[in-house]
Length: 435
Image (cartoon, rainbow, N blue to C red):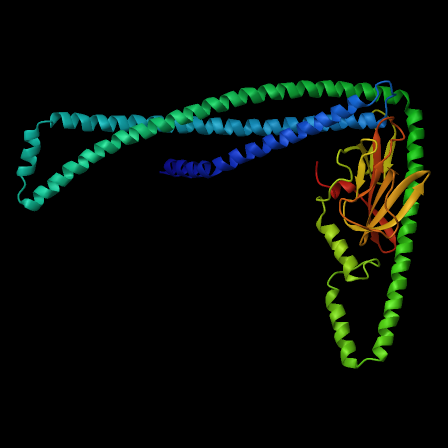
């Protein structure tokens, strides 16, 4: 009894799970193709860069990105393999069940044929009917013979249907086995490519290690630029807070003067209405419902914001990152995003331009989104101005060439939130759409 119950539960589970498996396999295949496309983009980007250049941190980052994405492809293939194995196991078990069912149906049908043969005489059938005790009994016997004939026809149909279903399951099993063979081959190819890319990475690391002192100077120069950027962002925040406080002071004075000339009831109602709009703890920059709404909108789009450039590859992650094969550590205030030279750089969310500033001869644009700020550094052809309202996706400039790699476009993208009077730097990858 327990075995029957267990088999029933498993059957129901697999019946309901089968569509989910099929859907998951489609999703995994779509995900694998997307990652594969990103790998092709990275490899195409590598081939476009001049080969006679010395090895750079950007080159190492690209190879590391390739390895990460190749690992992701292999993980996806392994998941696909598990689902295929599940389908093969389910098909084998279903084939076994259907074969037993078919054997049972054939056995039962054989017995009915044997019985019909033994009672094949029409005289026997008439004798069975006319031996009824009364008319109603005769009608029942005729109905019995009719239902018996229908039962035999139904047996034939069940045998036919079971054979059809068994044939379908065998075809599905064959398709899954073919797919498994193909997937295993793809897995093997991806593993070989992964090994090649790891060797390429080791070669780049070895060459970078030989010029560690030179790289250290590059990192110091980068740190100086980032320090100037942070000072500039801090100055922007202090100015924005000062302007917000001044506006608040003037508005408060205006409300006070209006209260003196208004009836008390009106003042109370206005104060209550204003209090009702303050349903969220605001920073000093969120001194109006409109600004607060922009902040809330930015927060609600965490991990949904579009990338500032269409073709993007991260060559420097946020925070402290040890450079493989060396004793060097880079500490990034944002993320370095590689793209094409001259690629359009777009605002990731609506806001207002707080500043268009120059950092060591290179342009940067800072856009305020309520209490959040986004900064885009290393721009050419900036086409926005201070205090200009910006739409989501609006082009604010073009990506300039990287300082460390000829022929490669690169921007530094920074996300900041104002806490009290100070900036807090956030990891932009936590806000952008996953790639």
